[in-house]
Image 1 (cartoon, helix red, strand yellow):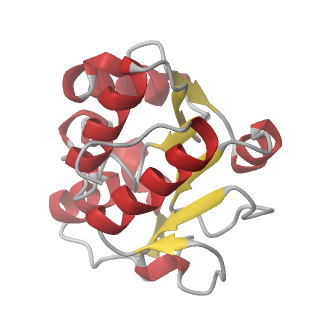
Image 2 (cartoon, rainbow, N blue to C red; image 1 turned 180 degrees about the vertical axis):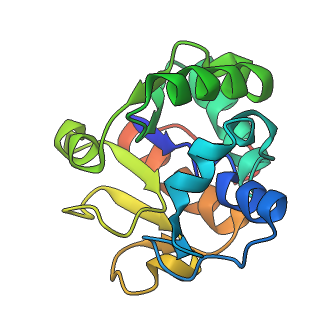
Length: 177
């Protein structure tokens, strides 16, 4: 199964939060500014969950998802959200930007994500605090530089990485690869 994290990989929640509240770009995963955490800012303004723009990886990921689903390669979107209201807003964002993925969203903590992966799965993630990075490729971000694991630094690099994974695990060739 091919799994994509949502925030930081598909949706730029951090960029939207920083822009809306005129905040500096976070340099660390656990972000605080003026005594407020990342989550405090999001709780203050839940509209960010709907207004956030897609990341620079979005178009490549969308193409990959469409191609995979057309040949029955299993795909899911996983995100760590504990507040039920945030979950509903995330479903609405996905319905607007990736309607083909309606019904493919799962809400899991970082540990649950790792525990849910099988040996043949691949998780595309940006979280540097996972308990394991086996079967994970990190989207390169300033806040995850300390992690030594597979990582990609551009949408084209991600496409090539996933193309290799799909060929190895499913014998499936992505278009343009």
